[in-house]
Image (cartoon, rainbow, N blue to C red; front, side, top):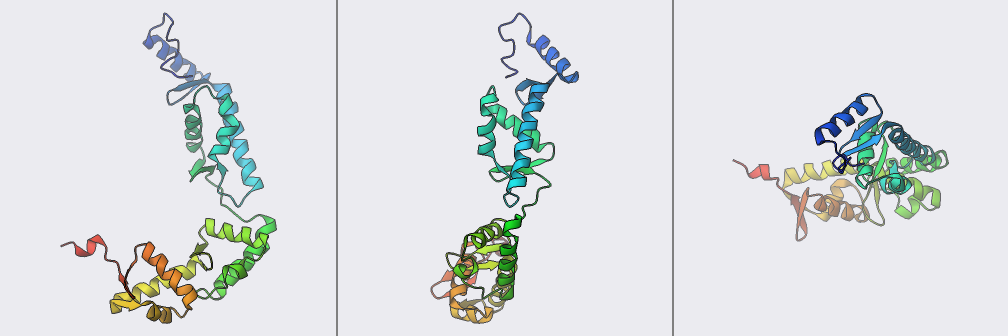
Amino acid sequence: MDRVGLLLKSRFSAAEISEAVMRLVADQKAVLCGRLVAEAAWWQTLRQNAIEAIDARHRSHPEQPGLPLNELRAMIQARLPAAEGFDALTADLVRSGFSQSGAAIRRTSHCPALPPQLQTAGAKLRALLSAKPLEPPSRKELAPDSLSQQALRFLLQTGEAIDLGEEVVLSTGGFARATEVVKEFLGKHGRATASELRQVLGTSRRVAIPLLERLDKDGLTRREGDTRSLRKSPMTNAH
């Protein structure tokens, strides 16, 4: 419960209450979690239940970053005396081998990996994307069925592949290579049309246009009419 309200209506002073709480903590009979104080055994049980739920998610869905926090909250909120108890629990876990990954919590040692049933599809996707890094198959050709679509989502979520729209997916290596080619060419020539950059990249318009649009969005390039140039950083104009 909240330390501030602990024994508020009792005859004990705040100093006496604080001393008693710290004595219980020292004897490992209670734990402090921010503003909350809880019976140690109860807290450890709650904590262990959360750990088991996280580990179970890692086993059943190794491709996912972890257990969504909203699912963990739904599992234990009825047992918590106050809403801030959940934040205290996650903070406790983060201090001892767990970390938050976006809206999920995971063991720090957990590395997302394709489950056995998706490994063949994942290997095929990686091979297709690396065979022609700047002229990959269309998205429909890459992932024509449910298993390959699941594997593709994994590659996109883990950063192995880059989504350039409904039709185009590049490997991260292919995207990085294309980015360097564009930077080098524009750095040397100042500006270029999409057609010129497409030729330098050695790819089709199908890939070049969404790629250049992504570089515009990322702030690397600036489109002016039919041409593009490198977007100058604030440091460029510093004197």
